[in-house]
Image (cartoon, rainbow, N blue to C red; front, side, top):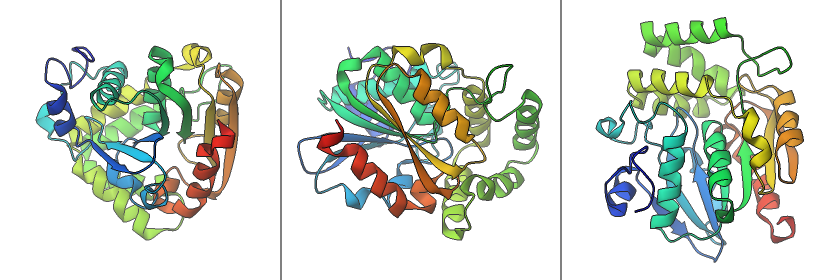
Length: 281
C-alpha cells in the first residue's frame, strides 16, 4: 500500500485520495512539476502562474487536507498533529499518479512538506523550489524566525475570538503589496477554511521546527524570497541556503508580500522559468 495511516490516505484507495484532495494533472511535456499551495489558500492560488507552464510540463495540482476546498469531514485532527501526515499525502499522490521524478514548487507551509518529502524519498525530487519558506517561525537565542511566542499567542487568540475580523486584518498584511484583487482572493480562501481547522493548522505550522533536518536534504533547492515579507524575514532565506544539504541558491523578488503568485505572478514566473530550465538542473 502507498502511504500509511498518518494521512488522509489511510486505508483508502489511491483513487479515493485523488478525489478527496482534488488532484489534477494538466499540461504536456515529459517533465513533471508539482505545485503545492500554502496555508490559507488552495490550488486556485496558482491560476495566474499555471498558463505559463502548461505547454512544457505536466503539472500536478492538489489541495492540502486542511484547505477550504476539501470536505472538512476528511480532516482528522488526530492525524494532522504534525507535518508528517501531509508528507504522507503528497507521496501517496505521486505514487498513485506513477510519478518517478519531479520538480516540487511549494509555497510557505508546503515548503516544509516538500523538504520532509525529499528527505524521505530523495529519488523522487529533481529540485525543490521553495517560495516564502521558513524552517522555524519562532525566534530563539541564535535564530531570527520573525516572531516571539507572545505574538503567536495573540494571533491564535484573535483567530479564536473573531475569525472574520482576523482574516480582514491578516489578508492585507500577508499580501503586503497594494493589490486589492490578491487581498480579495486570499481572503476568499481563508474564509473557505473552517475556523477550527484554520486555527489548528496554524498552531501546527508555527510550532514546527525543521532546522535540525535541513542537512538531510540532498536535492538542489531554489529559495524564492520577496524583498519584504511580514511572515518570513529575509535572513531566513539565507539561513536555509547555508543549512540545506543540497546545492541551494536564493532568488530575491523585487516585490513585497508573502504571496507573490497572487500579487506579482509575472515576476514569479520569470524566476520559476529559470529555476525549471534544463541548464539549472
